[in-house]
Image (cartoon, rainbow, N blue to C red; front, side):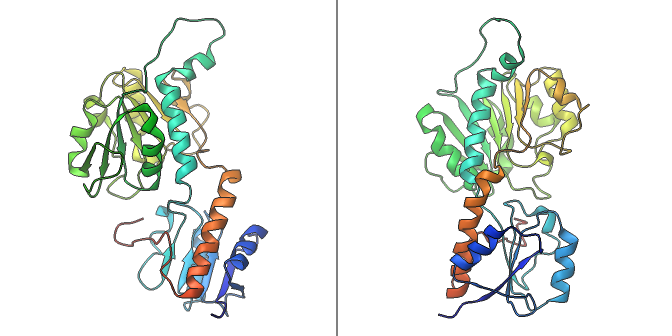
Length: 304
């Protein structure tokens, strides 16, 4: 089995990416001599587009993020595209659980207090939890929720059963899944169909005590409608690791709402990401060298 020639770009790519390619059995080469490309710059979309136009022989591109929405206009069947899909599921699910507990136990409120206050909070134990999305984050979160004996409903494209989930419904049954939920967790890929999936109509259907946790993308939620729902008490609160816009401006009203917890997109930090993405790159390089199917392939039709 001969080593495949893999290019790495841009030139600012950190050394651990080079180490991951080598560990997978790849030979690092100039892009003119390579057939695969590891692209490490999550926001330099135009640069990648130009590079591929200049090197149409590249038949595989590995992207760094789990979410690939910014690159979808480049993705087609002319070459294989892979991303970090599923790589960061464990740390993001862990963060989602932390946000759930923080919301249910009003930890955000207590953290802002400067004196002893009255007891407030709800149990996660036995709660009705609806999760939007059926990918790796959901699978990991369902496993983390098992000790809490929650009644879990998952809304996904396919209504096929998931281990540890009591109810799985298609996206056409979203409304039914929101009614009666104590919390709604957004763990979706961002596509034209999922953008704005939670807005005023959906918030009006939810329980007054329900919390919304978003670890997907900020644009899954209509931000101005969320502000309204929080201000008017239509829902209990929101715990957001992602926002729209992002970064959230300092003067944005979400910052001042007592029933809103915001973390700055740290469900997966660089310290967490490097070993996980490194392992994924090595695995895909190994598979590429061996002529095997790659992991985390992007579907041009599905949009993720």
